[in-house]
Length: 377
Image (cartoon, rainbow, N blue to C red; front, side):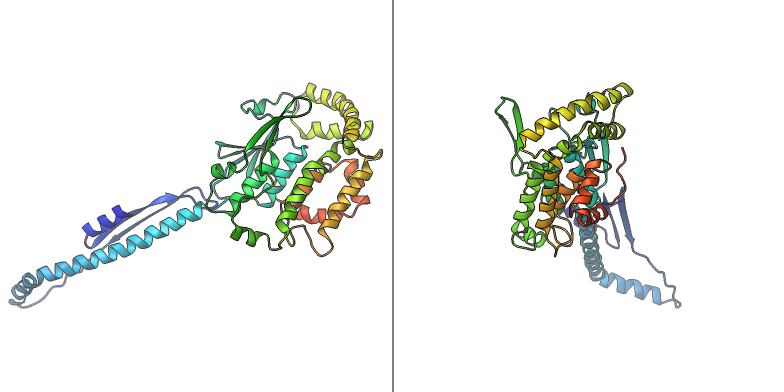
């Protein structure tokens, strides 16, 4: 800005300046160049004595006129410089508005409930993203990452976000606040490593259910006093309880396990041999594992009853006066629960859930709320 002011003071009657290019929403590049030039007009006169008198007058008043012209030109120059510089500045700020410059790449298994949670969030907020389907056997697509789980979200090709809840909280924070970058926000969710009872290293992330915004921003987003705590509670519930009901239900019987793996092979990234192996061997293995999971999580003999109970508990928490847990619009808990349940679509467990619980109306509303064009592979 200082350089532009100096140039305007040196150019009387002609102001040339250039606004740096800036990126705005849904456009590749906006460049504005403005050039202001004085226009002159020549007047002819008759009479022999007029020109000498005019020249004499000009000589007497030359200094004053030149000074006035200089001040006028400088004033106009400063006015236009400040006006257009600030215009360019505001355009740049608008271009940096949350969500407008993010290039997102999601590494996923399509049938993974945690990956489905992230897609539900991205779709609801209409954030464009590319999908890289990871081969669940070889995982070559994420061999570059020391973090070996999915989902992984790459932001602008440089920032790696791990863990579905961290990804969602980070992006939600970014969409709300205008003061933090993704790099700054991710520092709020520290990675913590520990060992479980079996001696296996476990990676967890601190604060992952919290959206890191100011009190003023929180007051606008969470209109009810307890809304924020409620959202965190049910996001955690989706991860700690609901997600563990999926496998025992979709692999409940040998036939259901085979149907589930047929769907997984069709939707996933498998070679011919891998697909055949996964469908039959994987189905048999998961049917056995589902029995262990049932015991591990103290589920009933008929695991459908645990699924029905959990889903009805969720619907009861929303109540009859709200369309979503977020009120008129879905909040992060709505998106998390929807993302988890959605992976059962097309399977017997999903049909049974829709017929034997009160979730259908809420689920259909969520489908409409998150209905956007499928991201390209």
